[in-house]
Length: 501
Ligand code: BES
Ligand code: ZN
Ligand code: ZN
Image (cartoon, rainbow, N blue to C red):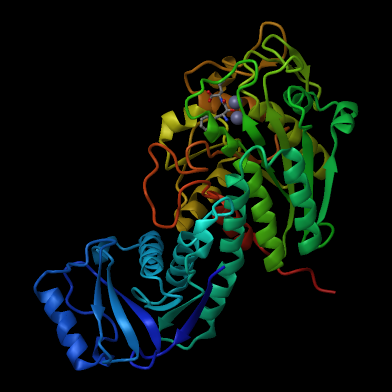
């Protein structure tokens, strides 16, 4: 991955092939402009005065310095209106700069701090650049040959080591987001549940975590009817992946993260239409993201305890598939009437939640899943739906998401929604009809959390770039890793110093 460092340097001293300077819309000046060679500065001022470049959000213009300075060229980068500038805007602009630099074929560039120095700005600039340079090219021979940007320097006006460490802390998070994207983008033929399981085992040994895989026969013996039922239709057996990261020592209750990892969702016997079915390879993204969160916190050695549980299956139609009409006994003893085999995510999450809560008594639970098309109908493809049983936890996640730019909004879990999943023949049924479909899915899950503080995050719209996705420089096509940064941040804010002694 690209190396990003933060350095206090005057721009007239920085040897670089490209210097990126952010300019606010309709402003004629920018920081450190006096340090530029007067002839270069005059040229830039002309460009700004003549309105050839106005600094509109995300626009850019190149200025060649013709040997009048240590930088070969300068990119003026539009930051948009100053009063609308946020950390998220910085993330997007920095991403645009990095993409433009990549297009120019440079191996290295420098970028001036966009606005007043604070930690959020440096974090956002680092993230925007490193995330935008991600590409999934392992199945393409040609792309590997194009030049890669190896080093980026953010030039700042303070020598406080605080800002260096912000960029250093951001690196493992971004690497983990890109790790989640790599897994999410894998085609379903190369990523059956067993592949995710072995990936989890290698992650664990690399980062000093515990990991184990519960196999199908064990799940049968343990009564995990949901995962077993969904997994039955495929020759690729289901796996239940358990990861434990103990950063806060024994005795502190863990957070439990559960991620849906359906490596391919055909819908099963309730087969999906063919159009865009290929996108259902992304139905594993919740699970991939949970693996990525564990990778990030373990590499940062956060002082928290976190358990990750990833139920992984392939949902296929075959003579051994589960069927509409089946009644399945779940891990917590509840009977579920299956009325649609395409509502498989909740079947596997239910067992994972019930098992995780019974085994680890977590202080709080977050699950992440590409669970319902209805979440996209409710909030579009750019906002994840949050539904939970604990207002504080929901608020905390939503507020953290405001800082990371990963948009999330909560939907209510009123009693009425539980009416919709009452079954004629069993305790509950696995679908609740079209109205409020994202909420009835969550109502289903809440039957398996036993009152533990819990939030469900439906990332159906945001887990990958799809129809309706707002273009963002830092989200290249494919899996986004949406949610990883927010969960890591929430856990970083939770971090407590390890008990003394
Ligand atoms: N994986 C899908 C949900 C999905 C659909 C995610 C489109 C992203 C984009 C899930 O397993 C599913 O098929 N859900 C059904 C539930 C329905 C049968 C109650 C849905 O949303 O249609
Ligand atoms: Zn489905
Ligand atoms: Zn699914």
